[in-house]
Amino acid sequence: MMRSFKLFLALVLVCGFLGAGAKSSHAIGNQPDDYSNDLRTIWIASMQRMAEQASVMMELQILAIGMMLDAKHQLETQRLFQEKLAEAHRDYQPSEQMCTFGTFARDLYQTEERTTITRTALVQFMQQRETGNGDSTGRAADTDRLSRLKKFRSTFCDRGDNGGGLGTLCPTATLPAMRNRDINYTVTVDQPLSLDIDMSNAEGTDDEEAVFALLNNLFAHKQNEKLPTTVMDQHKYQYHYANLRSIIAMRGIARNSFANIIAMKTAAPETISNGPYLRALLREFGVGDDEITAQLGESPSYYAQMELLTKKIYQSPNFYAGLYDKPANVQRIRAAMKAVKLMQDRDIHAAYLRREMLLSMILEMRLRNNADSTYAATESALFSTPTNDATEAP
Image (cartoon, rainbow, N blue to C red):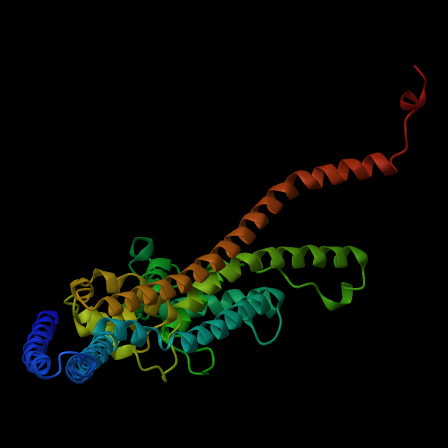
């Protein structure tokens, strides 16, 4: 552009000089002293036209440059919009793996509420049995033993036990699935991920019978004879009853831990909707439907749902294949994993609190063995009459 402008300027100057020279020679021949008129009419007018033409050319060039800059910014803006549109299309498409976490966890709240109801009901049942309150079998020691023996003979007896000598005690064969479940913690509680227990329903189930029988054998197996009402006004019996309540209170710490384990495995409400998806995960491992039902139950418990969320899901190869995804989806999966870990940490924290209470009760029981003798010696020293040897001066 500058080269063309210089060429144009040179041509204008050459033409101006040639025209001016021709007219000057003619003017000098006619009027040798009149140079000012030629300078004004030829040179100055040519320079004015040249300046006007240069200004017009520069304005045209600036217009072209402005159009080019406008087009540049317009294309950059369109490209930016297209890039953002492509990024949004890429980042805002959740993966199937992310939906799996949301589906597995969407019914945890309702299931946890059911665990609270079950834990409270189990603790209340065990406490009423020990205190002899309500309609429990613990109102009398004989009633408790007879009712448990009857339940054992009709439901849990295995006539092959005791060297095959239980045929007389158990004349009728029991169901194989229920045999010895009142003493087998592994089969009754530990092995299944879900237990068919619903404390809000009056209808009993096999799991409920087995769990309550196991509780009776583990806690307060030998019931204490209840104090008669006629002696409760005497101080020594009141003191004895206070000691019994202390034992029940300390035993309640152990009952609470056991009740919490059973409550976490309580079947979820029938309104939950993530059961089919949980079973689909186990089918990926090649597990049959019958075995899946035996493990998860009809309504997977809180324990079963957390088992799949915190362990089983990471044992599937599809989980790691699902990580080959968009960076945004990988970040979402990481956030979901952290959220599940926080829930698991809360469960672990609650378990630590129960463990702390159990350790404190163990320490209290060990201290009581020494405390009784210490209290007796202190009381004897305070209220005994001093001997003459002890009062005599050395």
